[in-house]
Amino acid sequence: MLPPELPPLPALTRAECDVVDGYLAVVDLIARINPGRGTDTYGALRAAQALPARALELRDALARMHARGESELHTSTLARALRVLDGERRAGRVALPPEPGA
Image (cartoon, rainbow, N blue to C red; front, side, top):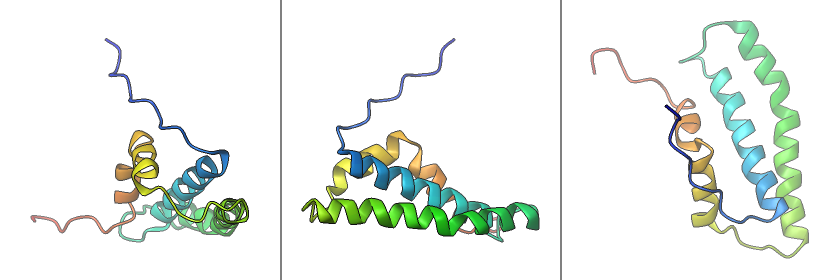
C-alpha cells in the first residue's frame, strides 16, 4: 500500500523557496542541539557548528527578497509550504518534550 499523496507545494518564488528551505534547515539544526531532546554531545556539537552557515543562507535568501522589492512575507502561502514539508513536526522538536506523566 502506498502512503497518502502529499498536497502540492504552493507556487513560490525562488527566494521564497530558499527562505523556507533555510528556515527548516535552521530548525532541524536547533532541534539537534536541543538539550532536552538530544542524545549525545557530538551530534549537538556538529549541529552547532553547521548552524552559522545555514543561518547565513537564510539571511541571504531574505536579503534577496528585500532587494527585489518583496517587502512582505505571504505568511499563509509560506505556512502552507511549511506544512507540506512537515514543518510542524520539525519545529515541534525545538520545544521541550512534555514532562513524564503529564
